[in-house]
Image 1 (cartoon, rainbow, N blue to C red):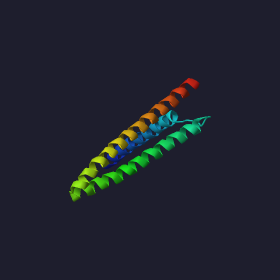
Image 2 (cartoon, one colour):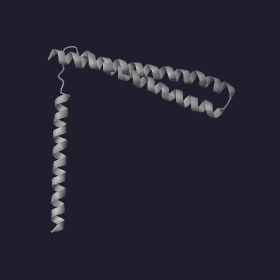
Image 3 (cartoon, rainbow, N blue to C red):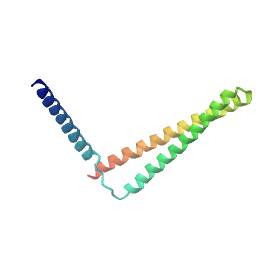
Length: 119
């Protein structure tokens, strides 16, 4: 008898949990339901280009970090001097990625505000 009541209680808990997930999903769908309008295609292309640009810089950083590690392991004077330049490039790249994301955030915020004003 006890086993059946525990089983039924668990079933009810799972049903409630699933119901919440479905309701939350519906709310999210309503919040993110954007239709493509004029200019949106261009905006999304710009976002896509920004992400490609960021990925390119991050790929370059991965290679720079590998080179810095190799130079560090060799412990020669020339490789340590070279690391200074590589690390400076890494710092510049990180600033570039930060700037791209900042621009992305501004563009996205402007798009959302424009949507609100158009409605």
